[in-house]
Length: 250
Image (tube, rainbow, N blue to C red; front, side, top):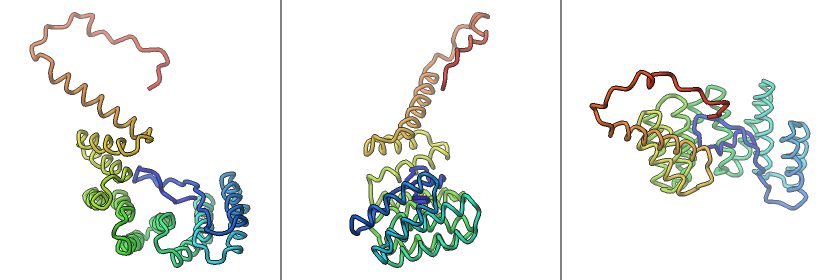
């Protein structure tokens, strides 16, 4: 569902559809699945209809409230309808009233509040989540995202370090920390963070590509540093521009 940020990249508020399967009977789960299919097709009215049917069969189900909130949230972003944004926020709050530790909803509501320039409310919400679940690294990761988006890299780094103190093998936190350190020019530490994340979860192609790029860059720098300082003059031909490759893609 939208706003459920599973991406490892902190600054990107990715809108990812995920099925929040209601813990109810098979009929309600079928309505949820149908709602997700409609959502993926861009038929948000159909999605809302099926999610409401699922909610009617399982009144008060937090996942159903989240699905409805996320759908209205996506509609608000696509069509610029303030009423949809208000409805999305209401559904998010209904979800959290029933399950305060609903991670996808915590992310969704934080994203919505930031989009409305209510960052302080978003941070307060995440801090309360962290206090309720001191053993959960995700509140710290989400707070790091907010800090990074507002240019406070030091505080973002502190939150990520706190998250890794809770869950030392959390790949999302390790990658996010690597991104911050890379942006600060610390390529060696960034590479170490990326490699550590890949050791925990190798199925991260974008991280693997970034690690390979940094590794190649560091290898090239080491070779350059090892070259003799009094190299023989190059022949004039060596200064000629190299022949451009064909349609090689990078």
